[in-house]
Image (tube, rainbow, N blue to C red; front, side, top):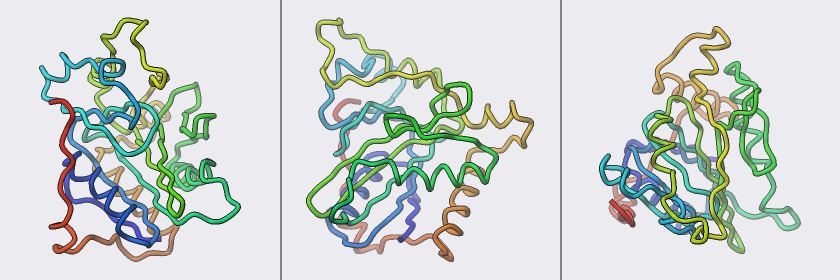
Length: 236
């Protein structure tokens, strides 16, 4: 496993890096990144069914479409994104939730008792969702990525993802909305130290490096980065 951490907060660039690692490299990766405020839709979802385009336009929140399925999510600087890319193993189901156990173990080390839900998501005690995931599978490779809400602007999250569509227009693959809570608020409730997002993300990265017995995060070469063109938003 190679852990790569993005130096950019560009949603379009980070989604394109995911695509590059998945299609152009053969190694197995865990890619970590934090995006600027944006909305990211699943491959088969409809803009009208998922997004409050008026609110997004007024607040400079661009909307992107990723390669994977799953629901629409809101990203900002308080949200850590993780992406597991691996080679498929014959006989193993590519749609199991085993990849999430790594995140659960890391969170447990940080005093966060998260559990895996039925939709390959993560939940806090009390019924609050902190992470949703989506997958993209080909004959030889599999990709599973997710969000981790630490200190996300939940007001903007809710308003960005408030569909303006009539019920009759809702897509068959519409997102399933769940009650959410920031990990930071949970830790404060549990009387643990209140930390800024950047500090928490560094702790998560350090735990992951230790778990995989790695000394440091890796990066892409300048030559590789020159080949990666940022994904354009479908709405801005």
